Image (cartoon, rainbow, N blue to C red):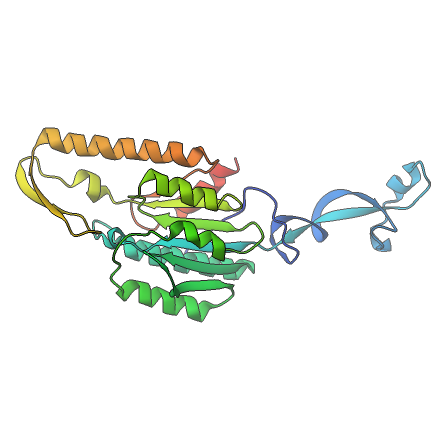
Length: 281
């Protein structure tokens, strides 16, 4: 059995529907929140006799509990050409596994799930409104596996317009080979939501370089090629550039109060669950 994803918001959800996450609403629940006058919460079964005796106005006091509520979960996916990179792990396959795992976990918790795929433009073929639709997710997963992505993810910042009105849990999956201006623009547009940037990298991008050999590199998004003489010094320079890129991405995300999740060995539910455990520690 696949390990479920134990995601959660970084604050209480404001949704009114009962679910599995700590909410701001009061109602059926097990976590005591406060006392309230009987007139404000007319449920005689929850009268607290001790609190009522101590009430200076001689009124009945009722125990009020915090309601567990639902969460809207949305996966925003970078569908640019670089996401078709096939190294030790296939980025597109990792994206599909993340899609299926999030959808299954949301369905098991009673949460709604949606998907927004971003290429040069937003297209209805890559959009799934928030809801409970296992069949549509399965069809979308098959389409993602067979479609060759192209171009750049220029429409990322526009995805925020299609998110639910209430605060949602937004997974933003990309390799983040994007200009920092575009990353900041998208984060600014998503500030009303709880964002989890999922950085899909592959160890082969960093380490799979020969010491001495001519290599031809191709930009997957514009098709431009370049031939280089790979040597130890250049290899170290590339590895150092990736390490610096990782630091810069972390600093960029943290500037918006967001902690990135790096998946460098394909999809791993344990890594994702550990991320959420550390986030609330």
